[in-house]
Figure 1 (cartoon, protein in one colour):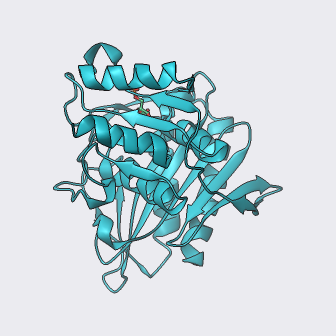
Figure 2: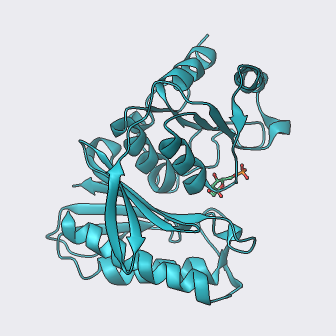
Figure 3: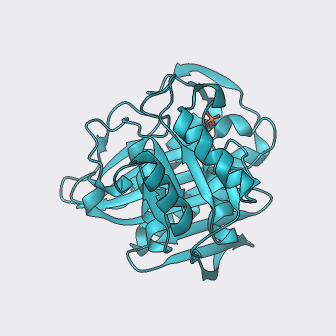
Length: 279
Ligand code: F6P
């Protein structure tokens, strides 16, 4: 696992360098989700593939930027699914973006998940890594990632990150979000999943929601590249992650690019989501 974390750290430093120094604009390509790819997306993807290709224990990789997974070593047993640069269109407006990783043994099933990680490229570069037992925060300083602290969620937070287009939210979702605000929750939504969830984790709680809505019944966020890694991290940190009805980590993907409605947060808020979505 150390080798994988090492490869992620090396890649993060190279990706940060690309974000800082290059204004690469758009490519002519679209990714599997139909979004026009930024040159920066493509470059981040190439960096990760290059670093992961050097690790014999990795059997396969799946990238949000590619249609299919790729076999690296048939004798390996580790599977890594990643979004090389989530929220990359926010680079233009100088908001934080991130890389997200799910680490599996033997297949890309959430039941086989053994770790998850993300890197946030903001005013500072931070890395959050979770194994089955704990979630750790690292800060990039002078070229190395230094351990800062363990991350644990409280029972209840006070911030709300409500995703998707409000015009298309189901009525029960809208009234639930309104109720949270009337309880005193404050709005914290940048449009980048990594910074929005990072804020909830570091502030100790709150709720990030991306519901199924009229325009996107299955939500927008991808199970393998976005939902499972954060679900794993939130659960290990003492929080919850559901699709409204079941744990996000119990949803089996049919295809590597499947999306799902998702709710991540501390216990109080996610229990309320469950109550509203199941009554
Ligand atoms: O998946 C890309 C992404 O940019 C996420 O990082 C973010 O949470 C989400 O889309 C924002 O979507 P919306 O603008 O529809 O709320």
